[in-house]
Length: 284
Length: 281
Image 1 (cartoon, each protein chain N blue to C red):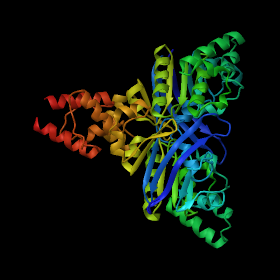
Image 2 (cartoon, one colour; image 1 turned 90 degrees about the vertical axis):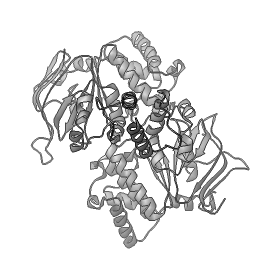
Image 3 (cartoon, rainbow over the protein chains, first blue to last red; image 1 turned 135 degrees about the horizontal axis):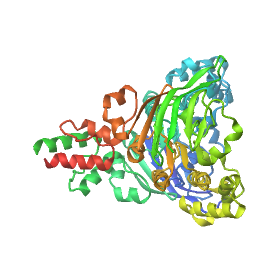
Image 4 (cartoon, one colour; image 1 turned 60 degrees about the vertical axis):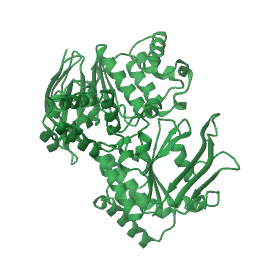
């Protein structure tokens, strides 16, 4: 494992205890410290399983070659609790993750679990709520919040534990566009502020292309591609074949090409495409 | 018969300290067999409005005409079963309401409840398993062994199986992968074309552009616009003022400064054809 990788999965296989089929087959994945990795793939491709292996919620199949390393520690029964302190997860449905009677209680839950002293706990809860912009709701009941506010509180609960890695498991799928954007902005800000590593499982390929340093495409339990977003999404046929969407810009480029308007491959962002089309239009 | 809301208001917890106006004097009429979308922010009254279509909530004031019935504040609950046979509501995450031991029993529950015989109900269920794109052998499985996307389809098949005239859905495709999303939306579009009304609550403006005949825009419990997608998105300032999202094609088009558009393109195909026209000139 090179120095700057914070996560390394080597030859990881996984079969659910009740199942016959291997749902992950020889997964090899390195994630750099401070990077944003988007994992895409259709429902049932094994995306969530991968992330649950990283924090030891699931245990990989027995195999002498398998190794999971998180922040320079090999994941074992002994290190799993230590590693879980470093990996925070936000799930799709915030209603399933609330335990506290008030927002502040909820954020404090993880700290209480870890036996943090009361004074420090209060301070960390307040700070986490401030980070996510929910300090005014400290004494509100979580059930009275909107979906986006609930996800903010869930994120605060994770930030309070000061993890090094934050995993978003379709954390914005239930939110309206404004809610989704504000959560993404928040995660981005926190990533920069606290030097977090972000792993985002998502169907939103437009998010993947804007935010991600690397995109991992999973299909039927195997890693099909693993590269920067531009290199991944230029394989339009493959992306369609496995039931995924192209980011808007790539889809548009493909449709234009079908209409004999060929756009050079280096035009690969929205800004570049707008500029290119406007220039093309003024020449005509 | 068109659906007609006349002066409809709804008050949550009237007379208590939590009293809140959910719907504020709503008036509209929609024609039969249309694809209608309801858009607006969280808390704008979309779901409150939807729950009036089958009288899960009854208006505090005003009259609703739907499926040959008239619903007023005085309507008694015992008269509503017939209405609910014709008007179905599908909530978010309908898969959380699956309960039978097998997929086929779960889908047959609705038809049986509305008077079909056991045999007829199972026949309908088998037909709808296929129509929603599930493999036939799934029928004898437990719904709880299925993936999330499959469970969603089972739940929706359970509603479609008794063929409601009016199908109301709250974000039915949320959380599905892109292919499943498209299949789900096409299923509703097909159901509408077969001669039913489909009413969809959604945040997805690309779906609004692609599928809707009419759009109802809600804000603070008021209906602030009832128009076609073209008309709704034509006035970009109005859309911005009300903090509504736009279809991605229309957003992209707005950045092409030296292009002239005959019409604001709302879908990918419209955008491509407008770009083509401009470059040809």
